[in-house]
Length: 449
Image 1 (cartoon, rainbow, N blue to C red):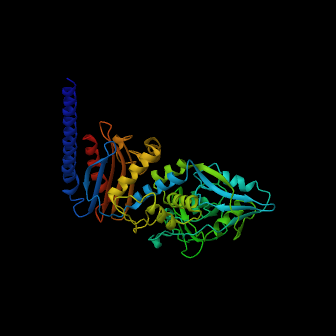
Image 2: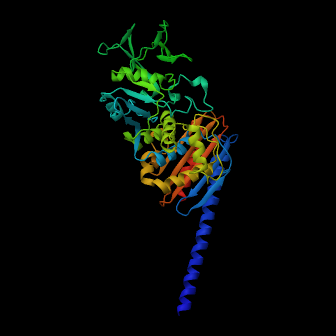
């Protein structure tokens, strides 16, 4: 009787295993058919280069893979890797600055914190700390070992708000916000003809106003080699434009900080190891907009902050090298990782790489935290997509000219958690048409699970 029960149990286990295998094979086959119908047979994606990886997180197995080991320019999907670095090394709150106090000076070590004096963050513990110091404050310059731009950035986008320079001591998001308000006498500002045009923060740099009275659109640009701004009045009742300023390491920040603090802050080559840290913001209050609105500046500075915590210096290249040889050494394919934001076309990752990283993030930090950071349907960069699938998809998009990507987490109809990555390169079709095709495919994937 005992032996018969064992045999019966083994038989049931064998049947269950075979059923699961055939079920998995069936799902994979149906996914392949759907991909062929929804994506590859369609003229929208016919001439592009596409890679797909879909993974069952619970069963720890691949459900579908099409060119998952091929390399693609991932655009802002690079922020997924940067997010992992931030989650791993920054903890639950951002390091605003490090400091050490001697008998006559407060020595400050910059950390690369992008929230300092940023308009998104009303609470400013670092500013309050600096303001209350009665001793002279000296910023140490020893730990800055990066460039203002990342490798492979487009130099002619220098005046665009999405390409703010990186720096060791960011202030105001490293941009000047130019604002035009028409027909309003309640704003204390610089009046120019029919409009009030002013900047946040106030600046003492050179500003030139265009005499073109026929312009319909407000514009603000910066000279390539200096902090000189060119403003053209528009017809809009209200308009605002963010223009990056030249950071020049610490120089511009210290000039703007002097005006804000009402007292000078000096730069020093003296090295006094910091003993204390002023914490600035909850880490997720930075990570969420970084992923929701795909904030390039927040992403770049997140990688730099992680470098400072891990290595004691602010260096994106050294941090990338360290992570690829340690935390990310088991990636399925070795990527070429160039920056924190994905602005660089030097970045090359595979769909399997993103699935692996997303699985690692889930295991180390938990889905509940990640759900609060990633955009879901109808929010962030997914505002016009997956609206009926809100709370079932949590993902990061990415786009450059000819590049459309999305990677993240997808819950099936049965509650099965899948991790996916769809990367499309070298496609000349309008971006929205590709996004709609991928959306239709992922919605059908969800119904199978």
